[in-house]
Image 1 (cartoon, rainbow, N blue to C red):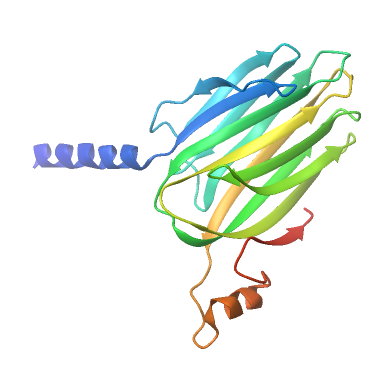
Image 2 (tube, helix red, strand yellow):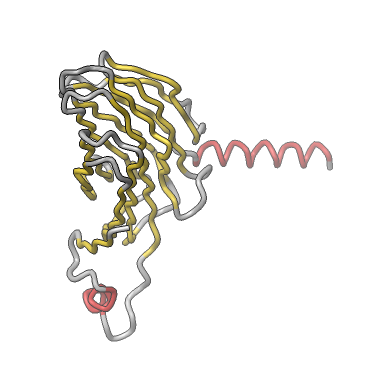
Length: 220
């Protein structure tokens, strides 16, 4: 019995590892080539880079994906901290990728949550999410020194497996400073068609309009 339980546990561990997505981080400055900063090994669904740097920026990156993240969260890239040291304006592009998400397919309601806190007043930050490299939602630019955030819903059809990403473009405008960033991307299935209504009717009831990419905006 003991051997059976050990074998079962090993099988379950292998199954979970096989279903795990992979977190990776890339960065570029002023439109240059992207560099992979750190790639977390397959099945390691939580990763961080602490610290990393380009010629004019220092930053900390974090990312969590399923199954380590709590459903319905697909990617949580919070506590992103960026500092800039140059008196010449530069733009830093950061990306957190979650590759190989499984167990989710069909029509989904994707919620992109963006937040910016403690940003140097003269800095500007834009952010966006994507699915399989296709932009899902753009937020910003966030400017000024106050905290800001936004939530966006988008309906999209996905097949298993798929990839999602969080991106930021941070511009210093020639001012030494810092900012703290976060993106959480979640997905929940859209309910099946109501009898007699059909899918277009259902989407109309949900307030999403037609079949293609559709949008609702709510400022947090």
